[in-house]
Length: 303
Ligand code: AMP
Image (cartoon, rainbow, N blue to C red):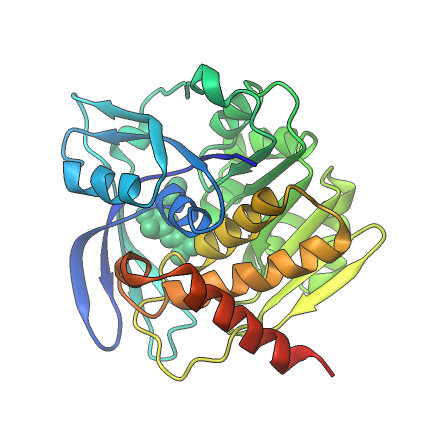
């Protein structure tokens, strides 16, 4: 089944303890759509500026992604984000963010042919825009959103986010964001508080310590895939979400057993993402490699 998603498309400058790359393609929507494209037909919606190169759109198309919802503004520049990772690669600081086109008024338009899409993912972006996108679908089966500290901490965005939370089925956030949103430092307690805010389930990502799924009925945990070398952690969370949603859309299901498989596929996609800068690893990746790593992960956790 089809997955329709909205998110950012950006140019990133990234510094890790081993290397530095300038103005490489990134953004929550781009990572999520690329990861999802290995599983199902995916629509990417978002907005970029006149500096967005054709080769980035060509790459997305080469993965089978429908870019009809990607608007190019001639009067503005693409979102620019720059970050530096510390020695253990678990922590980073944002050095610079230029919202550019993301700071302008924007109304996402879902192409008519996608309005019946059953699976919807709202990758990191303004919550009011996420909501405007979601409202254009006729009868979605599953709507899941991601958010970040920037939107949780800013008063206006936070209010919009609380409205959005009442309309979605699932929220994917990291442990720091769960703490910011709920005031709880314990992940289980934070997860339960998120459920009181509206979503039927929440997934809390904990970087190299895996992820936690909590709904009113069920709890699940998944470890991260163990890797001894990380190139660039940027986009791991978005790729996790793209793999998770892409797999559910491919299967056309969202029962608990499918959700646990999707958590494992999300983990696998996050692990491939961080093995290269930007989208480099995804450019070479094949579905058999994904399934092979999924089988390795399954073997590690079954006892
Ligand atoms: P992650 O590493 O999963 O947290 O995602 C990193 C991506 O988020 C980078 O490629 C950035 O371009 C993008 N990003 C940074 N700031 C924002 C923002 N305010 N809204 C949406 N995307 C952003």
